[in-house]
Length: 109
Image (cartoon, rainbow, N blue to C red; front, side, top):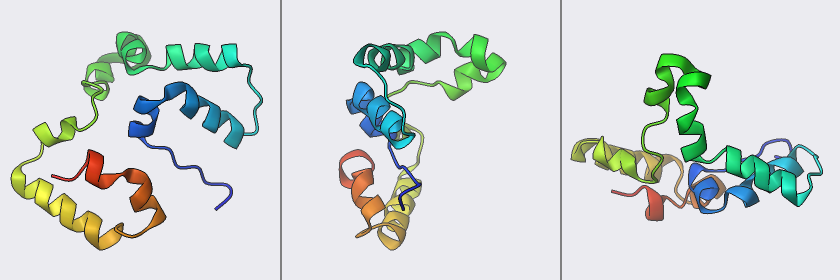
């Protein structure tokens, strides 16, 4: 739909300034390149993680764990990973959202 935007964490990790630009365009903001770069610099995982105690209190370290794509694999059991793969196949395989998630690249166990 035209009033729904989907952007993934992985896309933002790959190209944060591009993601900021996409969001700005979706919200119909016109931002100069310097502003996009400034926003991107201040919204990197590392930058937000450093400020997490200040912005999120005691939950900061919980919310901002590692910031690495695919780290969930270290938390899921093999059975949970297989269940996730099966659920993806059942619900999202062959859909536009499924393709956008790049499940095979970033998520598949």
